[in-house]
Image (cartoon, rainbow over all chains, first blue to last red):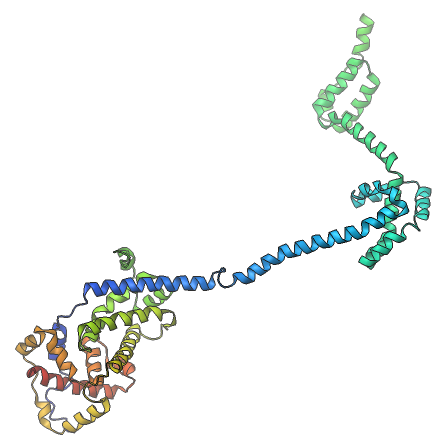
Length: 244
Length: 205
């Protein structure tokens, strides 16, 4: 192939370029709109499809629904198990000789520390006697407890002892608690220094100076700063009596 | 109908981004990036298709189809590949399918034509053809059909190469990548295509 015979070679293509550049071809507006519209719609469709693929409703939601549905099922199962256990244990408790100790169920609702406190406050001989008499009665609840758990069975005597001890002391303790409650309500004024001072003044006015002095002593210990500006006149009532 | 119209300010913000960045933006969900890309290449692609098809309707159909393929394939686009080369590779493949569907054979196969022109190159007269005169250029530009008919007479590979160069503005290496050939082969195709075009445009059929 001779290269010397190519005067208008490929490097000189300006004329061809001008022909191409002069070609009056334009994209029709209708075509442009159609393409952009279709592209937009397709983009949205693909976006929504991809969102759907990651959307829990179409992809991972079945698994989540399963986990969600498991929760109610688990709740139902636990509730059913509780009912079954309650049904199985209740007749045993009712038929036991200590069924008269049912009030102890109420005390068993108290906190562990309260139960321990009650045991500690009960007389030793009382605990011994109740634990001795309850040994036979423990067998029924303990046996039923064994079916549930060996640990529960091991704890059953101690639990029963607590119940019995608290049950045997339930009436005296209730009285003590009632007294305590009454005492606390009657001394509610001690929560406020102003009310406490009013209470002392009232006691003095009523002539109960001994109680007033005791209250003042407690008040002074509780409110050392207040007592500096508050000095009740314990003899005022007596002085008025003398004047009269 | 305004659904396809992008926010001008959003579109302006993308002017400085290159094609690959725009395509990545579009794949990330920025639809305005697509419109920016479209505006850059709509004319080139349409002219490329217009001169490759026998009728304007087919060109329009292919034009839509190629852009929709871009939309569908946006997530598989790799920024390492220039968008322009990617777009016109899609166009080339789509045109090949179109030709097959139309059972259309535009002259000869590429290898046959190149061989034929190599043989013709022995005839020195073919290289003596003068460049087109301004009058001839103006005449060729009067109608779209003049250039298109001249291009139709070229073998597929030569027509494709010369359109990628003069319509899309690609360099030799970029055309070689699209055609899957060496740079020298593409250079030869361009030379032969130019000679043939000059002949056809000087003597309109």
